[in-house]
Length: 472
Ligand code: MN
Ligand code: MN
Image 1 (cartoon, rainbow, N blue to C red):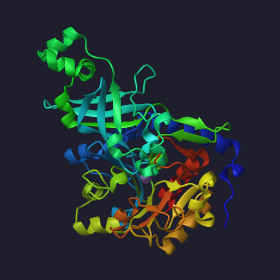
Image 2: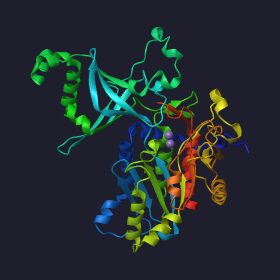
Image 3: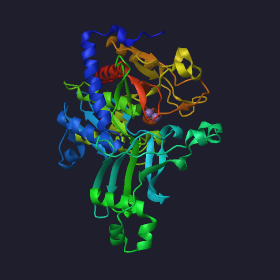
Image 4: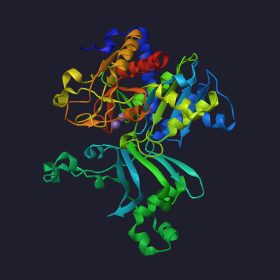
């Protein structure tokens, strides 16, 4: 059941569409390095296609009818798009769901300190990372600082080519005899991920003026200078770090990879390489769909889908309840029927086969770069703990839809049984009794600062998600 490389069957028109999609995807990656930025980008793309904020529709007491398009923004970190179909909601929705949080480091709440004339920000990593991969590379700061007066300051440092960047240092090889004997898990430990943010003391006059305490200014003069820069440029004080969310991500743009430009090297393919084609697919529905279509972009997947913006929270169910009310008469039973009768693609990345590490994979059941969108019947680890298990009948229907729409697809598991594992948001949506299967794009170097995808798989994912929404 080996699958052909999707590139082999492309027409000139396919290549043109693939290049267009890839260019827009790279722009989405560059503008969306955090969940908040991805939500902002998605709102802008959706509004340009006539989507309205569901909260405003509800507030105005408006009814919704087939053809209407609304989005529901959850705290600026998760978002859902709905395109109302001709059939009643009770008959279910065609849902595609991805996540927009990615592994990174977060700046701690009491972060700034100075040690031997270097100023640092202390961080706590987010999601599963190989810590040794995050040292010595240029990093950028993205996030918000919320002040007591209610203002929220957007911070982006390190993306403009004239911006400074920050980094974490590593020990020089010359003195690493002991470090090099350590297991990879402890070569760089979590508490060593301290960002270098300053190396120049504040001008003496300014130091005294600010602190009114000569000794203190002299002792922490580099830190004082960093604080002065933050105050001048962003108008916030050290105490404001307490109510800040600043994410540390690789600086710079995504790039075409390979001399043939067939791939993209970038930060956050997991899971924006599924989020973007999901959004692009629902926004390209030009006619009113038969079945209501929904695109969910969730937060906190990388740490277990927890919290108010993670998939385990109730925002999706609540938004559908509002839709039930706005398209007819609300009843709990109608809501439950709408959820249970739905079908979903849980769109998340899969491990791509890497010939350099062939031993970690089982070659018959792994995703190959360039061979199309990847379906996983189950995920999880060990004996499938934490898995969603898609029903055979649903998979059979999907095969029909994919074949009818000329989508290149492959079926895979993450890697060798008992080698490790991972989960997605699939099992959470499956709790409603809907049909769910994992469907995504194969990635190399998953969770590394820079990950690799093949453009053909991005293109096939978009085709798959569109075919699913129209036909499932
Ligand atoms: Mn993921
Ligand atoms: Mn992940």
